[in-house]
Amino acid sequence: MAGILTWMILNYAMLGVSSMSAQTYVSVEPIPSQDVVGAANLNKILSIGYSNLELWGQRLLNDCHIVQNVINTLSAGGAIQSVNTGNTVYLVAAGGFEAVTDPTYVLTIADSGTGAATANDIWVLDNALGYALNQGGTAQFGLVYNNKNPFEFALDYAIATHGGSLSGQQAQSFFNYLGTIDPALWSGTDAGFTQINASASPVTNYLLDNSMLFLIGSVSKQEFTQGLFTAVTTTPNMTYSPLGNNGKPTTAKAGAAFPGNDWITYPNGDGYLINLGSSSPQLLNDLAALRQRHLTAVNNLLDAINKGNVSKYLNNQFKCP
Image (cartoon, rainbow, N blue to C red):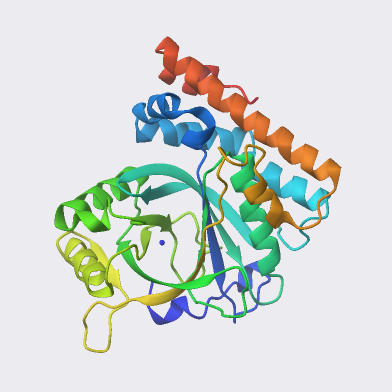
């Protein structure tokens, strides 16, 4: 979640996107909402640890095409037209929220310039993913706030970048370490991060996701920057961005959005579906089928947990629903 200035002007020439462009990141977890599976089952899922959850997320992504199926379904149903393999890439990365770090699907989407995805299509995709993956909420953000984007609002952010590769477990460890410096930046309201590539060409370089983007939570800007800067400067091979002209830590403005659904009040996912625009019955049925497939995958994982054979299941017995 690169140089400070190059964030503002991103070059996607290799992908057919003009040099004056930017990107939106979307983060959606494979782990379902507690309101969908219940607290006991969610605790069971979380108990298997980050590495097992990461492998489960990778199997769903690479073997079952859980993200691409949503994109394909939306495209076939006419809900989106501009999202394609030239402007959208994704992988399993780390996402932290209020003291918990889970694997998440991070999509990096070119959102301006020739060949880019539209803001509306990104918004629809974000909501459809939240629905199909049974999420209480998702996150999307761009590194440059655009007041012409009706779906996003301005929010301060800062980035911690590791010099070299950064594993999800390393990101988790850094987030936990940040909590020892200032608990409010770890377990406080809306405290969290997303692991991304923040280079000049993040769509091209998305596999090198060696940055952690922190959106400010319910703390002051000074507390946010000082706590994160202290954590970065006391961690080997980490750098903080952005810095002001005086060399002191500051923030930049992201364009952010957090769509979601209250599954208790709206068990059919209306909080997401209302944001898909005019959807045909066929599209809604197809998305509902994808949602059910995700729930089947969750139940299969829970069955393996209950039988005590998670490793064997994930490595040798995993099958797509």
